[in-house]
Image (cartoon, rainbow, N blue to C red; front, side):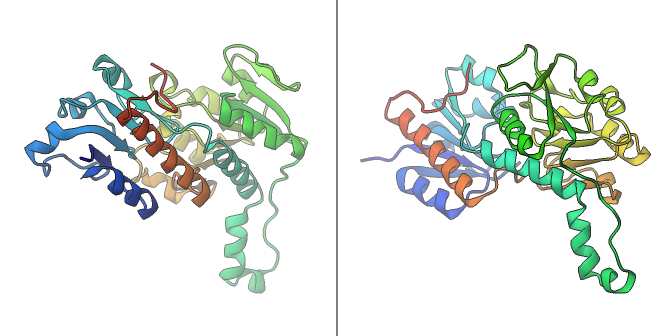
Length: 315
């Protein structure tokens, strides 16, 4: 039986790559790379794309493949795919929701604790010899009993909120309309919420609708004692405004797993001592990445079998 042809975009671990090679004829495109190396017959043969990338999968790229019918995204966010163009061509798009919710929420809480208690610096205080030479580490900030605001109460935002409750943290959330919650405070204005919390979590999806949703006004409302945590997309924050706020002390600090221009982030971040930086690894556990890869392949298999996708992206 002839195996279908797919384009594999991005770097995959062996446990993902091997089963794809077994099921398909695989062609490859590096993250941020070009298609110039593909022979002419590949463009005709490829019917599916397994996408794991942060660079934009544009309509122009899709149109290089006249028989393309399916794009399977590895990740819950699909703002790096021109879904509108795919829909216009009848190309199906899937993602991998739910399976990474717990890990992303875990990292958000972990970053709140790590920044507040100065954990990276505390380890360095020991390994550098400062503890032995200079004594106690500087005092840090308490976590329990604070007030937290969550921008976006979707799957991940709700999981973050649920993890905050055992810390006796007062939870507020921003959404267009109130949602069913166990007494959490609803805001329909982010700045108003930011002015009344100590920690602001950004959990909205990426894309044009949320681009720059956290701007200078929000940061000023959060204030000089406020902590910003971004586990969504780098595009959701006005990054120059954030850097200015961090450098000037307009906010106390930030814990960031996502940035603009990944992997080459703004070097201004590297000079700051009030940020906790993480290399976009919120779903980066063995268990979750294994399940994400399996779900991506399940969607591909459903397409090639003529069946409904397991987790289709809404049109």
